[in-house]
Amino acid sequence: MLNSHTASRSQYVDSYYAASSRAEQLARPALSSDLDVDVVVIGAGYTGLYTALNLAEAGKSVAIIEAQRVGWGASGRNGGQAIVGFSCDMPPFEAALGETGARQVWTLTQQAAAEIRQRIARHQMDCDYRQGHLWTSVLQRRVHLLTDWQEEASRKWGYDALRFVPKAELPAFIDSPRYQAGLLDSQGGHLHPLKYALGLARATESAGVQIFENTPALQYVERPDGVEVHTAWGRVRAHQLVLACNASIGALDKRLQSRILPVGTYMIATAPLGEARASALLPGGCAVSDNQFVLDYFRLSSDHRLLFGGKCTYTGRTPANLTQRMRADMLQVFPQLADVNIDFTWGGHIDITMARTPDFGCERNVYWAQGFSGHGIVPTCVAGRVLAEAMGGNPTHLQLFQKLRNPAFPGGQRLAALFQVLGMSYYRARDYF
Ligand SMILES: Cc1cc2nc3c(=O)[nH]c(=O)nc-3n(C[C@H](O)[C@H](O)[C@H](O)COP(=O)(O)OP(=O)(O)OC[C@H]3O[C@@H](n4cnc5c(N)ncnc54)[C@H](O)[C@@H]3O)c2cc1C
View 1 (cartoon, rainbow, N blue to C red):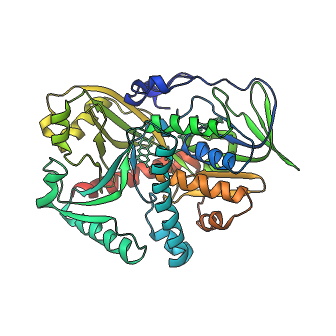
View 2 (view 1 turned 60 degrees about the vertical axis):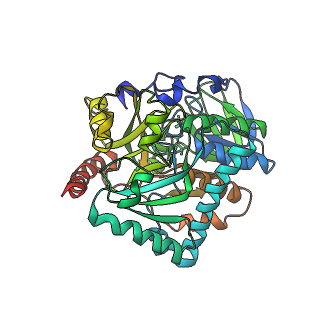
View 3 (view 1 turned 90 degrees about the vertical axis):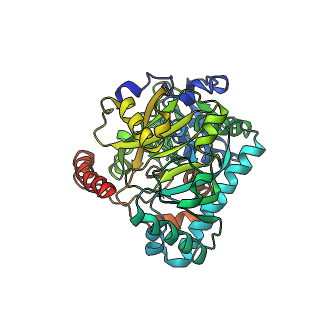
């Protein structure tokens, strides 16, 4: 676990997001008796919430059981960068599905980015959404990755929202000497992730979904007519089950667990900088991610802080001197912030698969979506749609994702973590040399 950043049950981690969304944090009851519903969802992050919302809108009775709080996991801690696309990019989809199938996945992804904006507006979610995402290249020799993607996106996937930004034009977007070029995606954006999760939860409840917090699912049992989920204080019987547990699925489903590796990633929030100083750093107000293997990602908050994320660990332990090390990374990008205090440091787990491909599927009445591999705001919206469609009798889109192969990590998570550390050292070296 992430020692100093892991909350006791029913508390959010001590993050900027938790501190800035107190007014929206409704306490929801734990499950206290048996319940019968059409669908039971385990996990109240974006995946569980989106799936439940779509199912409820299609007329199903749905209950979500959450071990901690709504948005307690990655959904309430992340970098807030709503990037159009999956972590693995398009090549694995094209290899598994051909160009036509891959184009369908891209269309779903683009539609999800639009749906997020529409849902925020329709359900009046106060989550600081801002349009615009900028990919940047630290290394000159990786600038071609930006132009290659722009060309591929336009030619193969019909996506023309990307604009190349040469170094001479970067100051209009970012006041940093670190980058050689950028690629602006006008359909990407950023948001306050916990407020967004809490807004989704409210929308879901308005559609009739019951959410139970502080209710860990201990096990599930398949029955001829459906499933039964056991908790400490009651059982939920349902026709269908959705596992939306991300990196903390643990022993609840060992087969799903064997296909993902929990990886720690971290964030800091500066003290408020004031509007002028903050917007001088990122004049266009975009979110930024670089294309290093161990990437930095950052953006401004609505109260004019810099929120800066990066690093990754495979050991399950929080790195020593985390705040100082994150601060040092931030100063590599913005040396002009040397006098600024860091108000918050926190971390969370992402769920990576071997090839960073999403792992969506179903067996009998059990459905799941995991393996977002660090890039989940838009893809979880895709997952919510695809699972709900399949559960309602239309598996066409889910079948696309089921063609991806997501094998178990050989040797289990311990050995996988060791190999990842070795691999990471190699790629980290390539980020520098
Ligand atoms: C620090 C960090 C930065 C990130 N930055 C970005 C970013 O900028 N852009 C982006 O697109 N993605 C980012 N991500 C990834 C993104 O946050 C995730 O992909 C996404 O939130 C996954 O949503 P989820 O609902 O699948 O999982 P989660 O939000 O983790 O939700 C899973 C939930 O299941 C619950 N649960 C687990 N087991 C049980 C059980 N047995 N019983 C009951 N409940 C259970 C957990 O308590 C948890 O609340 C980041 C992640 C982290 C950690």
